[in-house]
Image (cartoon, rainbow, N blue to C red; front, side, top):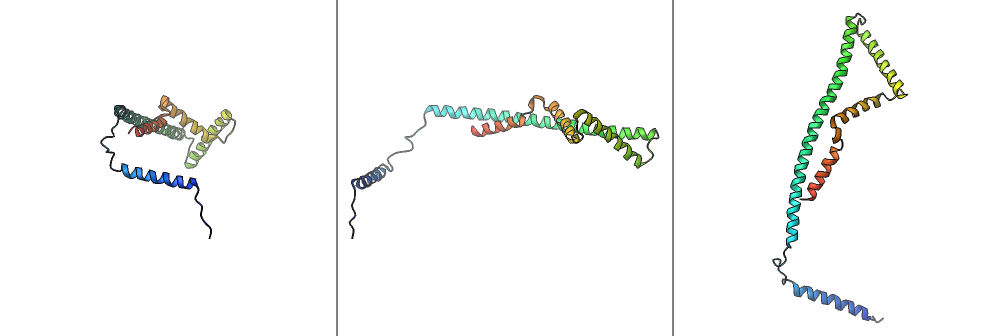
Length: 170
């Protein structure tokens, strides 16, 4: 059989491990958790964190309230614009009916197609392509959003930032 030779390094590693285990066993139960206390600096930091948390919660609450008010205002204005366009169409059709230019449902469809053609033509003259009518509707919506929200266009990002900060300072 082959003899195993132990090198000095193997013996040294084993002695160090045994010494660490002995030190650990000797120190068990010797250190009381009452002796370990936080310095006053940490207490001040905790109070500061509580104040910051309260401030961010207040800020978050006011931002959410503002967002709800602006959303309500935008929805009302957007609905008003859409209702205004619908009432403009209805008024035009009624006016044409009272002038005797519309005799039935076919006349309403024909004049609606003619008005749509005029709108598409005006869009083509202003943008250069007649495929962008959906983009025109989106531009009108974006402009009305900018008019309503004004300087609060990044309100969603502000609310998310405040929520993250409030959660950090818990």
